[in-house]
Amino acid sequence: MFWTDRIVEKIEVWRKDTTKPLIVRDEKTMSGRAHVGSMRSVAVHALVSEVLTEHAIENSFKYEFNDFDPFDSIPPYLDASFYKEYLGKPLYTVPSPELGFENYAEYFSAEFITVHKKAGFYPSYYRATGLYRSGVMDPYIKTALERVADVRRILKEISGSEKDDTWLPISVVCEKCGKIMTTRAYDFDGKTVAYACDKKITGITSCGHTGRLSPFSGGSKLFWKVDWAAKWGAIGVGVEGGGKDHSTKGGARDVSNHIAREIFGEEPPFDTPYEFFLIGGKKMSSSKGSGSSAKDMADLLPTQIFRLLLIGKDVREQISIDPKGDSIPRLYDWYDKLAEHARNGDKDDYARLYALCTPPKEREALTTPWQMRFSEVAFLVQMPHLSLHKEAKKSKGSTLNSVELDALEERAEYARLWLMSYAPEKYRFVLQKEMPKTELSDIQKKAISSLYEFMQEGEKTGDAVHSKLHTLKEEIPITPKELFSALYRVFLDRDSGPKAGWFLSVLPHDFVLKRLKEAY
Ligand SMILES: [Zn+2]
Image (cartoon, rainbow, N blue to C red; front, side, top):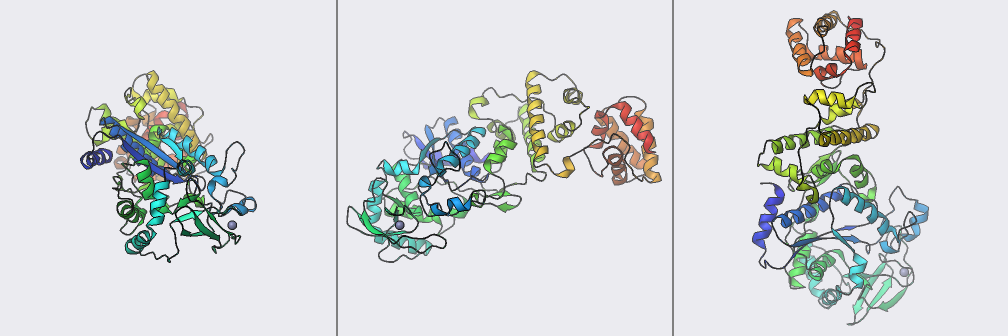
């Protein structure tokens, strides 16, 4: 069973009150440009929401941009001398890197929204500051402050984290310097808390100010694990998963579950932990700014392929992609394999995934057009004298319909983009106009001469050339490596290339004959 269907079945069993609409929630702290790995969480929640809807379970997907957390490090792509003074302040008070955005968090949220849209995910958005200012968090803040001894006990018992007797589970914004990271709140009198701006944090100065303020209606922010549990209650969250790193025993989720039950007296939402998302084998963090940003990846892939990357793997498996390696052509091949199952009318996980790669709105009108393999399209777009349409028609064996032509054009556009950006050297080809300087062995020459005789009979299909190359191995005899490297050498001046039979069939026939003759 496809992972989302399995999760939704579990949710149906778990859910006791079947009339209340379910709220699916996810959140991201907007500390900088979102890394593509952040999209896994968005995709898990968005897809669960989509499948719940399919099962006629009323639900909504709410996505929080956390703009209340502190600005704790300056991403390498920003001017450190400008941003230094904002370290330690809440994100909503940090200026946007560009004009036209209310603040730093809004700037990066806007970019991340375009990525969600590219994937066909349309959650309803809200901001952490809006939630706190609305007052819905106030009863939870009050309870957490009144029962702080129990909060401290839970933290110690579950995660082993010890807090001193004055510690309160909130942080306040210093009225003098505007920082949230450097303040220490204590002494709750039922209406206000005392605080001192005196925390020692490397690289961030505290101003020493002391005062009292109301922690309610946006005056304070609960610490993460308490904040998480409070939001579940305040919003009425029914489904919310977390990354594998937060889902261990004694981890953030475990602590928040205990706080939800023991402090707020509410059941935590249905949990659906998910595995890591690796780029080039590494787990990247968005604040480091290294690796591929969500925006870069969204720009590189059409919607269906982007969705496949995000939802194709079971939540229990890691996603691993290396845009500088074979990952991109493999993603397309994977998609084409799914399409084949759909075309055959299969009712399996492949066909299911194929359908889910298209956003719900367009899913009903979904067709499975014939598609040329991505690696072939990528090769053809590099051969200026070849017509992509003509070769596609030859490859399909009949004229392409308008849907297939559109699909071909789209693939060509994304192939060009990939070739200009991440494509590794082995996918970049230049057809050699002149015979390259190369030393072929007598055996290689003999094989090329035999191939020339065969090609001289007339234009051949890729399969026919492929079969001929196969027989040459025995006939000459020649090892496949020697044979193929000779062919790639004389046409592309390199040792590897696309499937040789297909490649020789798409090049202009006269050119192939001329070059083969020159080579032996
Ligand atoms: Zn201060």
